[in-house]
Amino acid sequence: MPNLIEQQKIITELNKPVKYVACYVRVSTEEQVKFGFSIEAQKDALEKYCKEHGYKFKFFIDEGISASSMKKRKALKELLDKSYMFDMVIFTKLDRLSRNVLDANNINKILKENNCTMKAIDEDDIDTSTADGTFIFNLKVSLAQREIGKTSERINFVFKNKREKGEVTSGQKKYGYDIVDKHFKINPTEAENLLNLYKFNISVNGDVEKTYGYFVEHFDGKGYDAMIHYLTDTAYIGKYKLYRKEIYLDNYIPAIIPEDIWYKVQDLRPKKTIATNIDVEDIFSGLVYCNNCKSRMYRKVDNRTKNTVIRYCCNNAYTYKKGTKIKKCTNNATIREEDIEQYLLENLFKEFNKYKLNAKIEKEVVTSSNPQKIKQLEKRILKLKDLYLDDLIDKETYKKDYTKYTKEIEKLKEAKIITENRDLSHIEKLLNSNYIDIYSKLTTTNKKKFWLSVIDKIYVEKRQIKEVTFK
Ligand SMILES: [Zn+2]
Image (cartoon, rainbow, N blue to C red; front, top):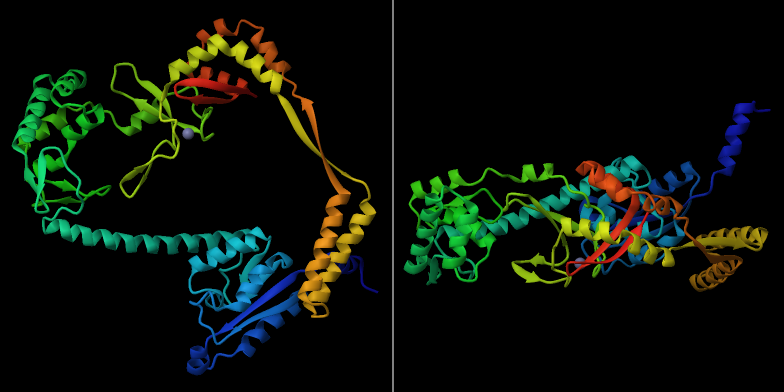
């Protein structure tokens, strides 16, 4: 008679749900000939593993097929089609399943959708059934993706060489130059205009506002960003900076601005970096959403004027793809934070009443009319899996019965949607207090806390607040 602990062990062992495992085996003709690899060796290892763990298993075998030809691997395709039936896919080593970790990642995505994990029994680091294993697998995937990134860097290197020969790689015009025979040639009028801009900037001691006034007059149709770009571009001293890289090419573009003048302008530039922008406190970030595409709007800190201005803009309004602007969201207008604040303070009550009318919560209530029957059907599905895996029934019968049982279960588990009015008394209470007086005395941090405690989302489009939802 086993003691109590042993008895409990046996009971937990018996109660453990049986795992259904798909065993994938692959050998290419070349491997068979060259290395004497055999299907049998893999099969034995996998079978032994399943038996040791008490798994139910089924083999999927691709024989004489290399890992690179995904299309020809009928067994793998079948396995993926059926993955919803299995808890786990196992193989001896990753190279049996896929050529590389990125392909494996794609396979894993399909498996994950079907609640199935994968594991290489001869390699410790491929196992998505555990948190550790998943972490390491994802790490491998990102390392592999970085490798691919390096390839594209190599492509950039080719471009770099082209540039080193002095050839312009794209047809992009740069202010101050013309492109003649794939080479940058100074445009005398534009070059003079630039030099005057630099000189003016020095004459006003780097005053950005005054310089901008000058810029608007002399550079037709160009905006503030262009001015900053012109005043900081190293190309004008003959050092062409590679896009997004700290690499500068000499002898690629002729200089327009004498170095001492260029450096003087840099010294006069206001010492504002992105790092200081992080310190700028806002009161609505995280709450402002685009009414058009429903994505969260991000804040832009504008240091151009004496008082820092925070604006919110839609992240999808522009996306850049290979240098071409592709518009995704039409809401390209930005909204000032103070405008949002003012609107809300004036219209909070109105917006709240508007919201209250529609503030119903939907609750899904699952009412099962016959839990006993559901359990029976679930057991039948498990039995069905057994029959199929043991080849006692064919695929068609399996599919037909499986669908029948799951539909019956769904029917029995009837879900009802119940709507209820939301309890908003906490906000009502607040709105009936003299919150506007209190608000005006709050620090920025506390103002932010205030809005966070009241408002869920602010939907904005074309500089207007379209909808406000409450906490
Ligand atoms: Zn948008």
